[in-house]
Image (cartoon, each protein chain N blue to C red):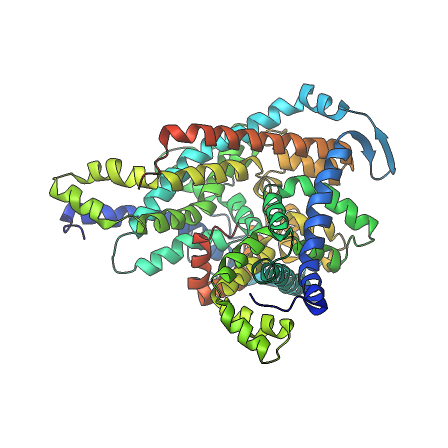
Length: 277
Length: 295
């Protein structure tokens, strides 16, 4: 496409690239390095990137905290992320199926209303949602945390776009063969929108795993708290014990990092759809 | 699609639509309306008292001492964050648009902070920005600069938070830039090369104008998110030192869930919402001056 760049240009290109990559990576290195130090050796000038006496003290302390359990929090996070993802994705796919393949009088207006709710920031609905859950007696329950995931106008929009391109004839022939609408939905529609679905599942999962404010507000008892909330609490408790904090951070990032590396191409395609965040 | 218009169809529509309808109405539309009603009330959740007070909450917030501070901190965050995130993600996106060995590796590296949770990022950055032994100040010491104790300094706490946010978000917007760059028709560059345009000229006359719709969206999104900055603040400074980093969402969180003043919190969230609307509308007005939709 373009002519070969000059030697100087190439060197400059790689210099900027490596500079940006270093800035991006160095806090991760710092985190890893600190997590393997003991409380006594963590504060050194100059920095020792490779700990002289590597220590698992930080990790050991993370798994033996007073008052709350890191393992328990991890399991809570895993369960809640999976549950929120299923609820969020299923409710969106089901609604999109109706809007694209079973339109009814006023369904376009209803879809417009869905789109309008995308304008409402979570900031405004946070307080009333808390009060609604309180009235339902669902504060400090997993159900209470999960239920608001039902509202996912953006997901409906995404899945609708994808389902619009589905050819009706597949669905019709299946119906003529005697399949029910439910069967058509699960066996034909969902597999056919597979790529979008996969992207949405991953974005939903990562979003739930990383979310902080809503779980912080809803789940108050320590046995129910999520990983992010526990790590946030640790930041207050273990001031000046950075080896423990960094070990906690490493353990919090690891699972989502593995998920990302395994599914990278799908996550990246979600960015062009405007998802994640 | 051909479907028999019968009872089973109506049942199916109801079954498929109910979950999202509950979501949209119970957790979006009804809360929106009730939030507005709460904002006009003196509503203490702990005492269980609700009293209609009209615009009192709004007047108290807008004329109080705290509001100008909160606005100032939030705008400081935006003013520091916005130009740098645009330039950094533009640079990263343009680098990734080249073919070079290891491209996939660098792409992954740039995206790592994005998949990291804000809590983990904030915990790590608190340590990076720590006074004497923190990574940043040790790096600054190498070049002879005596860095401040970032997060415990009134002047430097917000720039510290901005640095963490830039680190966390650049990769996300870089991939957005990259997607936009990929959609630029290469013939533009070929024609420019034939006309003898240098790389600077190509950047300012082709790349930048053709990227302007994407850059515009990035500015809009960034302002919306920036006005609602919260996780980073709650964990890194919790609004301190001495209230030097109080921001909107942090205030709303504290009023609602520390003091249980639901009315004040709701009024605050409406003020924030209206601010977001104004900022967004103004940007859509201004876009005619710089955004190019011709290509």
